[in-house]
Image (tube, rainbow, N blue to C red; front, side):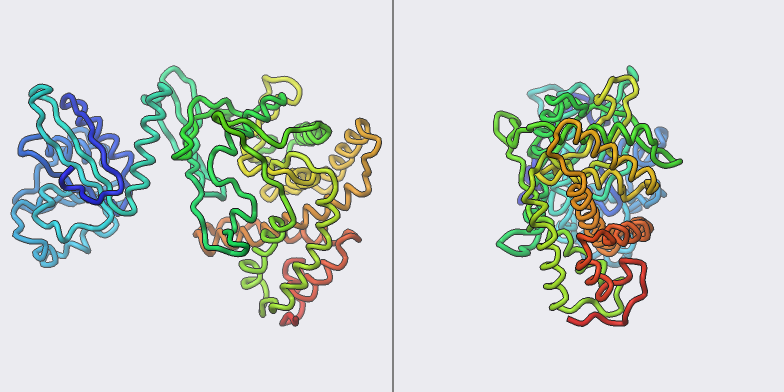
Length: 519
């Protein structure tokens, strides 16, 4: 499209009639966010007004809105759903300089803005914008229009992904389903529940490829050191791998690796915990599943899309870079004087000494987020299939104790200590029954270490979610994590590490402690 030179994304869309133009308008209404700018141009009489009116009616939920063209008033401002919607026509402008005289920047701040005849003020258009040009094409009939769409700047990735979602849903025959966003997790992923007209439902997972962060060490960013999945292939591979072992994972109806999209089976909203807390019987089933899984000889490589996915190893460098999050994010908030550099080195050395022998023991599939929000209860199924597993894209080869600690010391659910110990005993009993060499005492030490590692990591992650990502609700979980950490550090195996916390970061143990931490 001529008006979209240098656009991040460009495409041509065939609009066979006016109904197709209005369909595009509705799709745009579902896409735009406050602050978005849409420039609308093209042939005179090609349907710009029809598209603009359709978009305004969809945004304002008013199918009877007249939405007259603001040719003489220059712009019309509407009260949208929590933000203003600006419809402007630049036909009468001589240049973009005239916009300053009408306070244009203040009017469009935080608004969805739709501008006709944008070429009259080309120099004043924002760098981040969507351009749509409508053209006649007589070869295809009088009603046919060709829409050339170009996305500039930061909006281009979002537009590309939105179009990829449309293609995925169309190919999977879910295009007409109602879409509703679901509460997300603490990651970059997003989810939608789709409801079809026949009553069926599915989940759309939007998990874009993880961008590389700044280099931290070894020439790698944090995500690579911590063994976090770079794209959705890990999820696809583990979903099929777990299902091949007889476990319940969502069926995958369609997927797009490049854009990180998957349309998957909907397991509903019932998990192993509810508003009252953990369901003891369901938690017992979840514990038994881990014992059963950890007794298996599981593959380290899994097929995915004609390739082989190799599960990464949850090695000591991955675990160390995770516990460092507590020093980088939690300590500045919790300590009156953050631990000095020497204290950091002692901290890492103590963790290295603690973790090395545990990681030298036999390892297994470690799903890594094996806790209540990710363990659905499928009552109509039998045996271990009653547990629906949904969050395993960061799975690694790691210590068996890690997922047990993730389950029984859930960051979001306060599992009573009595229930925790009873389930630990259940796990040990089940493992011992199938493997006489299983050592319950050694496992108890590994459990305390993995639970402490996870708690330390979460202290840093939850503060980071507040300070960096604007999610203060996670701070409410800190007291529970701190209590858990203090209890785990009471194990004799962790005595030296507890001494470091008492001296350098006592808040993490629920103590006031000294005013500063010496190296």
